[in-house]
Amino acid sequence: MAGGGMMDFSRVIQMVIEGWGAFFCIIAVVVLRQTKWADADKARGVMQFTVVDGFLLVADVLAIGFRGYPGMVGYYVVRFSNYFVFIFGYLVIISGVAYFGGLIEHRVSVSIRNWKYMEYLVCGLGMAMVTINVVYPFLYDFDSRNQYYRLPWNWLISFTCLLGVVLILVLLLNFFKNMTNLERYAILTALVCPLISLVLQYMHYGISLVIIASCAAVILTFVAHMMDYTAMMVERERRREKWIADEKIRLLHNQIKPHFIYNTLTSIYYGLDEDVDRSKKMLKDLSGYLRGSLDVLDERECIDFRKEMATVECYLNVESFRFENQISVELDIEDDDFKVPAFCIQTLVENSIRHGIRKKDPPEGTISILTRFEDGKHRVEIRDTGTGFDVEQAFDKKGKHIGLRNTRRRLALMCRGSMDVNSAEGEGTIITIVIPGEGK
Image 1 (tube, one colour):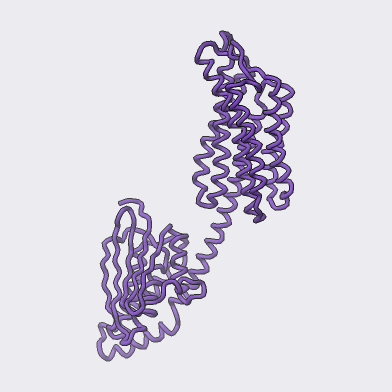
Image 2 (cartoon, rainbow, N blue to C red; image 1 turned 120 degrees about the horizontal axis):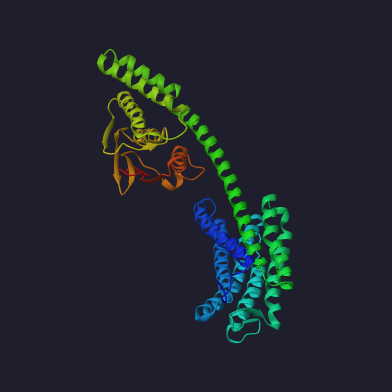
């Protein structure tokens, strides 16, 4: 009801359209929050564009619904809502400037700061005029029935909005060649539709064509962003799968080196003359190590920590046997119900022995593995009493510790894990792995 009579059908339709548009904006913001990790600046720009348009739609629904509504409630609601319709209209242009301008700066690596300032000046002038109009009406006013009507200077609102949209359009047309077809379509829709609507609405006031057009522009911009995000995810997953596959082959090649197998079998052969049972156990450990290394070749995701540790223990037993108990092993495994990338622990343990303990004089020392579940996270700590090394140099791309660098990357890619390395030359190394848990 408005003004004591039935609300006309066109107003109902417009309110329904804008109401659904506002609801879409809420859903879009929730979805966009999940894409921030891929490109935070771009996702934030679309979110701002969407949030501001959502407020604009809500304000216009209230303005339409209470137009002609009698009494003090109608008096205040219709005035506040119309004021914010114009304010958020300018803010939509500003948020569009921030988003599309960010696209240009990212793609072309140019600064368009002066152009942004010009846009902000135009919109700031428009918002200032609308605010002054609250006290000294010269753009629009309301009659005794709370009905909106235009005043002679109302064209200034359309002019400033039109100028803001045209400025964006002119700039983006200069950089069209640097954008994808989908982005071009979204940009043209986002700017041309409101531009046409501004002209039509100035000639015939009634339906808020500009606001409906801005809603359509936001929807298409959101769709363009999500399609770009989906393409990015597909490409990222493709690169991830290829990198993991290549890394797994490289790891297997490094783990199962012919000379390692030859030296171990030679040690077992000569050990049979001294201790048959111990040599047989070492042969079993070597078999377990080889079987464990080969079994994970078909694994595309992370494997159980228990499975990884079974291979690691076999490896440690073999190395201890080969080097006549110069390597001491300490295991403190309290937490083993989680997953890690294949060869992850194995690579770090091997690194500790080959580049730490075996580099000492005399070549002996202790390697320890500790696991805990703390604060909802799985923590694995690998310590050695080896020679230590320069951590900063090790993680440099030219450094020789490629195993450490790749293990850290695999942890991040495959299980959202992190790896921290502390090492001091002559004292040893502590490697801490933290993997988010799913609860216990």
